[in-house]
Length: 245
Ligand SMILES: [Zn+2]
Image 1 (tube, rainbow, N blue to C red):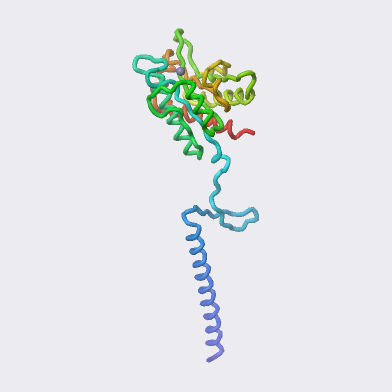
Image 2 (spheres, protein in one colour):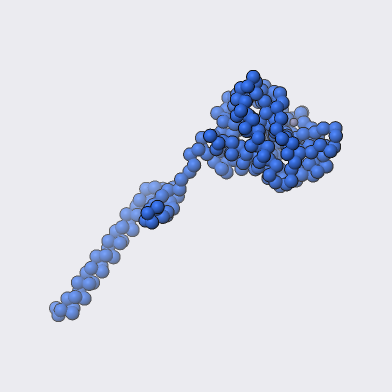
């Protein structure tokens, strides 16, 4: 072999060795990704600028909370109404919107009812306390003889100071988030002796989602997209409350 041919031969050997090494590495990676199954894998650039493999992180905090939602009234109890618009139907729609939104964020959701049925208030209280819920929110719609009254108000209650600060904090956050879209008026939070809030052993609040007796509020309540946004806003309030220390 001549010197020029020998050099070419040596370069060829090095080149093929490198190719074989690269194929070997690719085969190992493929095997590893099969072992990891369907777990999503993303490439991330490390702080020092190097590439590293990281599995997608799931926020563990989101996983551990169970949220209990209550659709006010049901069955023979229509709640308040205006013509064929019934509070029991509006509240059920809203908790279902909130349920799917919160589930999409990784939370476990328990509904006190998911169909048109009447659950006695004591039974609602029992279900709330029997759940492993961290927070309980009841959804209602308001009414009053004066048609000028409008807006959302959030009720809280504490028995002899039990969880008082927590309950006030939750009510304030929910009220603030609830009015974020569709130009809702905030009527603030209010302490009111409501049976289900009294029975609940976990932080809880009741959101009165506008007045069915007011034209402006009623127009909003008739629109599914408004109910959906309101439910999502209330859900965001629940999430904000849970994320607080
Ligand atoms: Zn009600």
